[in-house]
Length: 71
Image (cartoon, rainbow, N blue to C red):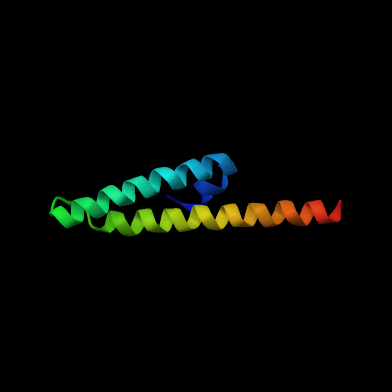
């Protein structure tokens, strides 16, 4: 998923996305182990999407903390 698409989402949506992606990553790893995985590159895509979402959440938390300190 592109970073621009993720930036449009709210924090709750990002957290739900992370949970869903981690479930998908588990299933992909399971498929890889059993030899049923068709698209090995999907594992990399999912891992990067999780990392991007976590990075955006961290940024949003820091922004909120900075705003509360100024106020």
